[in-house]
Figure 1 (tube, rainbow, N blue to C red):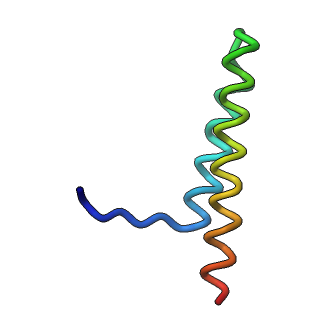
Figure 2: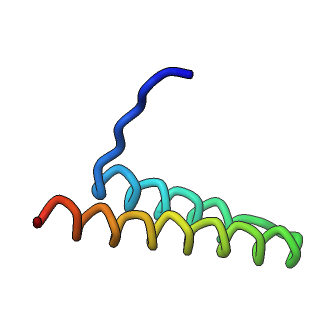
Length: 54
């Protein structure tokens, strides 16, 4: 397993990308799934931001 690092900005960017794709999704179930994934990225970004501030 290789080591990877991600910043809060990268996580926030990923959330925005997923939401953009959800916006173009015709299938309501997929929209819901992508929004859920984006929420996870947003939570990760918030946690990483807190860690970086300490």
